[in-house]
Image (tube, rainbow, N blue to C red; front, side, top):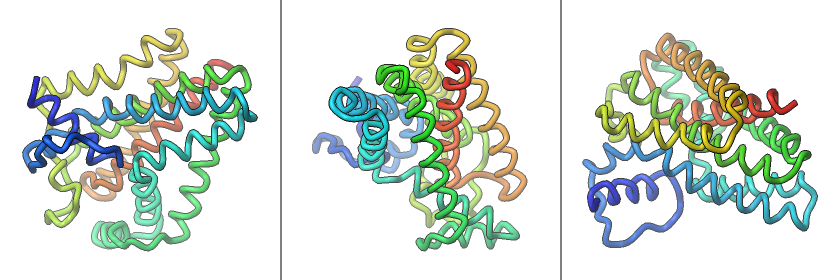
Amino acid sequence: MREPLARFFTALGYFTRLPVPARVAWSPERLARAGAWLPLVGWVVGLAGAAALYALAQVLPASLAVILSMALTIRLTGALHEDGFADACDGLGGGWDKAQILAIMKDSRVGSYGAIGIVLMLLAKAAALIELAASGPATAAIALLVAHPLSRLAAVGVLHALPYARSDDSSKAATLAQRLSRGELILAGLCGLLPAFVLLAPLQGLSALVLAALLTLWLARLFLRRLGGHTGDLLGAVQQAAELACYIGILAHWT
């Protein structure tokens, strides 16, 4: 179990700001296999957000508890996925061809498309969680526990299915752009799907899964048509979009 645990800690250290044991030596080979552990990283982030939301809702209004829990999860991940979503909005919104889109996404500055996109994304996620919390903080906490692993599984699916769009290895995500083995896909699938099957009613879980899957498929087709593959920013965009789709699916069934 030593090597799988080292790969998990490598993924945790790459995808979050959480400290990992110093004895876990970093290596490109471990990072290349870290994508399979991304849904399990979602368990850690989702659990932290859910615990914070539930605890804060005992002493604060539900709306404020939701916003503070979102702030915690963003802090834990270093806004990695949110940054990718904003860059993807800028690139796909302002670029006309593949070269221009990739150049825009590589630019660290945030443009109009990115700013508007991330504001709307955060508002939509907050609104959905606040509506779910109206029936009790446990409902919103469960949504976080389900959406974070499932949305990261969506990103893993795109990473595995599509080729890497950049022709060079200058991106930090280039090392991760490796097709997963069957065992790694099974691991990612179990970690991503298990919370939905365990924590949600069957039809409620199905609603979240179907909506997240449809949106992921649409985004994958868009990436393939516009860029011929994926980038790290696009994977972040998939995670954010699939997370919102989970909340909407749970909310739609609950409503």
